[in-house]
Length: 345
Ligand SMILES: Nc1ncnc2c1ncn2[C@@H]1O[C@H](COP(=O)(O)OP(=O)(O)O)[C@@H](O)[C@H]1O
Ligand SMILES: [Mg+2]
Image (tube, rainbow, N blue to C red; front, top):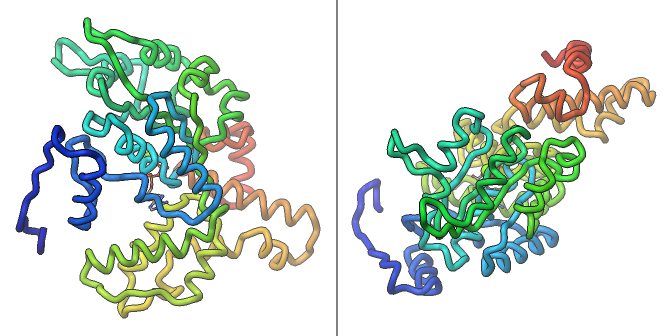
């Protein structure tokens, strides 16, 4: 493409190219692969220099050679989609469909048609669509426990409408697995069925050395794809980014950068271009709670910290009180009381 216009085309014929050769063509063309499996990511797209994350990536790479189910855990925005698509594209199944079942939208009323389709509407279900390929069971932790038995039944099916069913399952959760099991929000039998290989993506705040790499990558990307061609950032910005705890992980970092681009007049991203929310919350980190607190009494410090935790959880759930209370393991009433006390509502 040049200036939004196609200036050339290349045909990929799935029957004649080896994965290796397609990778060569991808590199040659200098852009992401465009396969008809509806994915955009490969494992190589995952930017990291963190040792723990590299170990997890290696696990993902090895898992691609097998068909055993994979469970991906990691907070929102840690790149679970990249890893899931990457495993699919690295596997023998890469020419076959990559289908997503989004558990957050499943209800008693639609789960059956989502899985098996509907004859009257002539709609195929996700199981059939994913046959031969990969089914991503996304946000399993948001699936109501009462519906989990239905999902367990579905993933155990070997034959559907007289056709043998061959699906590679990849599941994601963005909460701690032990907590989900302890709180009986995840059925054990379903968990054991879907978790043969577990890959845990550490949050960005535990691998801050990745921040400059990710920043540089996206700055280069925006420089190539927007009208602003020579953008860079100043040292204070990187310091600010190091100090922040990134509850929304890489997604939040990417958005912060995009918003800075929108606020930019010159060529350098300064602290003033960074979203207010980030600057405000940096001042609330534990260390600055200590420094900023007048009395220095434990009670005042823990209250300041509690306020920060609740504010963070509220952000994660888009301000939904019941869900926030559930995640924090307290009653809705107590949460409401604390929100009023800390002026969070
Ligand atoms: N390690 C990474 N390197 C580059 N981009 C990343 C990385 N992790 C996440 N992203 C980007 O952040 C955004 C959120 O990633 P996604 O895979 O959707 O997260 P999740 O599914 O865990 O919520 C996407 O735009 C993705 O491209
Ligand atoms: Mg995701």
